[in-house]
Image 1 (tube, rainbow, N blue to C red):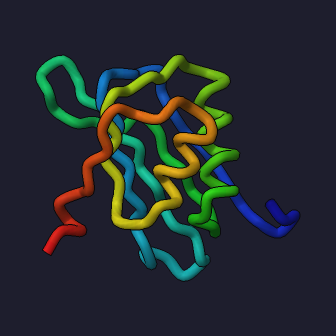
Image 2: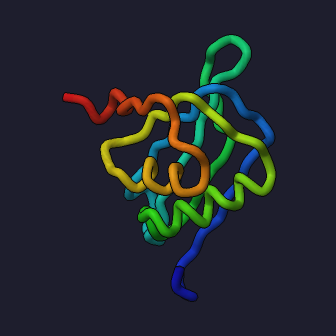
Length: 110
């Protein structure tokens, strides 16, 4: 990461079998994007477990964010759901173990 880069991770201690990650792009004039890490709750409803605010969406920035998450909680999902870029999945696999399954978020399927 460069000194001018910005990365903020906000999380809670929830963890389950499935992690869902997606970036929200272009929602502000500052050049920051929001990545939301979602988990399944007791009633199989998704809720946010972590937020990543950054000016970068690449593997390096996400590895830094996931290492911060790993320091705080034990996360070992069998399934991850991501958008159609490889940065989430590659960063996840470099910090945690490779999940048994990877799903593509339905918003990115035609």
